[in-house]
Amino acid sequence: MANLNDICENMVNEVGDALGAAVVDLESGLLLSVAHNVPYFTQSYLDAVAAAAVDMFRGKTVGTVENLIASQRGADVKRMIQEVQMTTEKTYHFMSIVPGKPNALLVLITGRKANLGMGWASLRSALPKIAPLCP
Image (cartoon, rainbow, N blue to C red; front, side, top):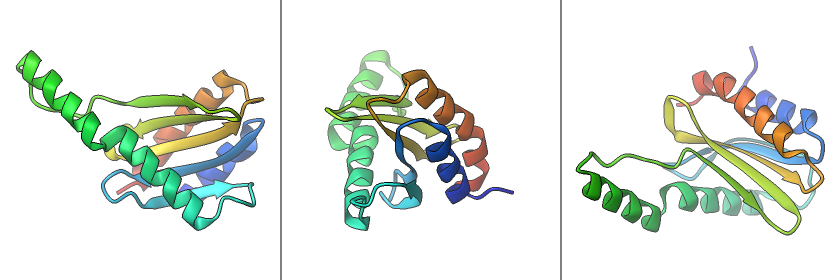
């Protein structure tokens, strides 16, 4: 049976121009797993990227907006953001909450030569494999 590191490694290997993949705990901000092929992805760099992902999904302003929407709709507050694609000058970042694990986030980072469809296909096909391995 594959572990989180194996799944992340497979994602990096199967997507052209992939740089790294990780599973982030959105409660603590800790990396549960990471695989990459970039020498400058040091531990402190990876920790900073994980913290930025936590802010995007669970940051104070995101929580404020979720509270406002719930209030306007007369509904319970819930985490609404499920997926994010972010583009930088040289990279694509694909991010998705792991189904059934609202505090686990799967991230794939690629270069801009990567096919967007392949990035999403790899991420989405890994999610059911990741779910049983996340706390």
